Length: 188
Image (cartoon, rainbow, N blue to C red; front, side, top):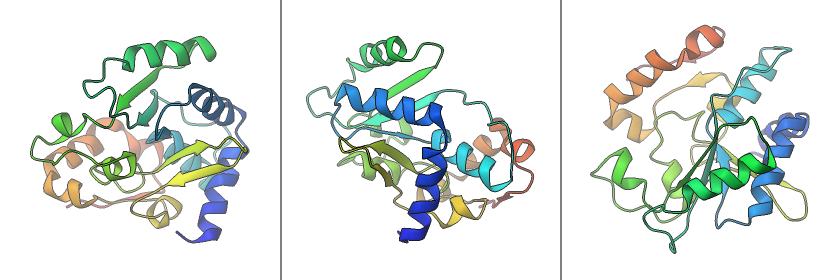
């Protein structure tokens, strides 16, 4: 990833007190390979790029982590409860990526880590995640880079191409075209 692109996304996150509080809450749990992704990053960046003063509402905060010790995801609800206790009023969704290959596309091989799991997300601007390190730096995970995110472009990832109906279904159901009419939405 280009350092200027990383800096642009990191600056958007640092400018948002809610984003930093959510990243701090996640960091405090010390989950393995844990990040916040999907709309958490995309919505903030796209709102900033179009000059929107009020941030687009988040449906939820998507926490993704990778824990071999919990292959069935038995701790996910407890993690969500811990996060909700730290920041009430936020809908937290924690998913152990160790098991998500069983749900996204049953033909996927088990994911190796959180970054590998993001490769199977359907849209490039959604397949971006952030975390706050112990020394208070924001790190980004973006297996498809940041070009589409920063250019207001939504295109299918390779998984989105393989699952074109799912990709098109998400575009139809999420309301992104109405939220960001300035963005380009590419169809497979």
